[in-house]
Length: 123
Image (tube, rainbow, N blue to C red; front, side, top):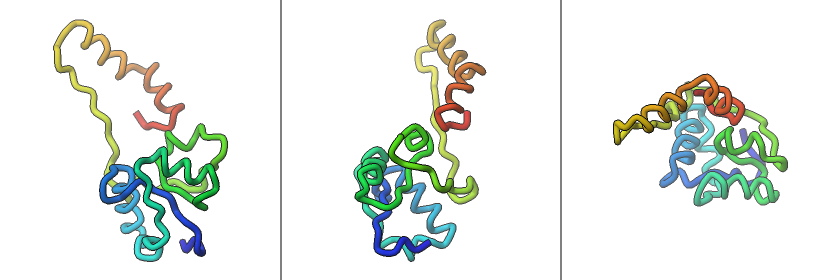
């Protein structure tokens, strides 16, 4: 997995969830030790993606949902799901109102599931 002298951009693995996931996956797959000196730490995922899109890094590790519609990058690989913790987003009804209940129902509908899938998420 050596990226001969070129930078691999990712969100800071000490502070940003996406970077933490990347670090965990790289360690589990046995690449972290080899790549850690080539990591270009970005403040967030979009900044890591920008480094790649401007050619300042040869590769980057970002969320699929951020990369898939970016016209200046291509997706070469996806980490296997076993290599990192499951990434989840939660929706919680804090008000217990009719409106919030309807909104949560909408979020869990097939319509939204299709939209999320098209944007790189697995609902």
